[in-house]
Length: 479
Image 1 (cartoon, one colour):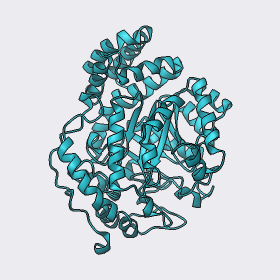
Image 2 (cartoon, helix red, strand yellow):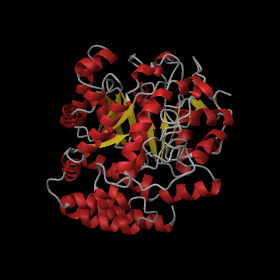
Image 3 (cartoon, one colour):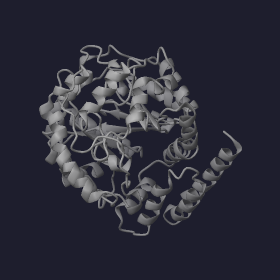
Image 4 (cartoon, helix red, strand yellow):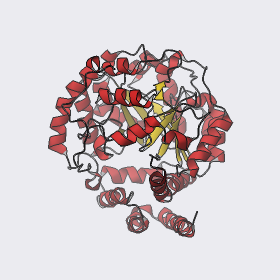
């Protein structure tokens, strides 16, 4: 850390202490200061949005921010501010940008890691279920990946799986060792008990996102009888311990209307969730069912509902596909994030199971410079319409081409999946969504659609990329 960074960090902690004394009145003043020290401009739009929201006492974003002070343990709140805002953004954004230019490759903001393929549940339609406990990375391997990432300016790590809390002792040990990083875990929640919550309070830098995709009947049907009650108990423990948590929802053709309903949003808020990640179903895996892909009408419904409730509900939401307009398309392949499976294969995305790099043989940086990640870097965005960001679900020919050209292989160890076969599952959905996406993009481009005005979507210039109507039919593009 250079002198400038040291000065900034010291100043930020002084400011944070000032903020804690009277957050409601002091946040706007601190936002002015943060804007002045933000070298890259990465935080400017966000902090302006916060400032505007705080002027209105009835604004849902003001209520959400206030809840972070009433509902969250002060020391956990401080650690989250330190790691998520200071380390992962303000102090490291320029380093990642400089190294990206130096090495001519993507350096992501976040890395998703599967410590294990094991899970204590056997949910219908889960691709991890075929592996059982066959795949694992050791503590030393996980620790080394985080060390490599920090050297590149990456301080955000997200545990996935499998069920990452099957390895709860190692998860906590990594949080403890890397106290300067922020960790998040996508978890089914059933392994969270009071003892684990106390460990979370001790390390302070782990936030869970619990997978819940409906109410009791929907959850128990997919995950097993009694699962819903166990997850609700986990949320009750987290709320009582004043630990922040969120929800992870996968919407399908079978549950989209429920997931996007006001009743479900209100339930998440009542549970105490501070955020929700929405994912649409991806037909990944030999036995995956394309019939579960949400229809174009359902995807538009989720687009509309999420944006509507962003204007009225105190819940921070991220729609992994439909928010492409806020992040200029696909964020995978190291552009903003990447995935490492439990076999140490470096993958562009948690939903793209192809790789040309195993981190037991190469470094993280070598993987970012590998043919597949460089293909992502060269081809992003994959569509000039940011509502069609994905090279698989929205532009299925793009992924197949990159996998073929890079020499990447399927990382499905039990049942390798040909990329052309996988892509063919998405062609009909992509064509149907293209029509909706064209209409939405033409109407909404550059306008605020849910977040405060200064978080409005990017006014993207036209790129040399796939047009909305040019979806490739993989049935005719096999090499």
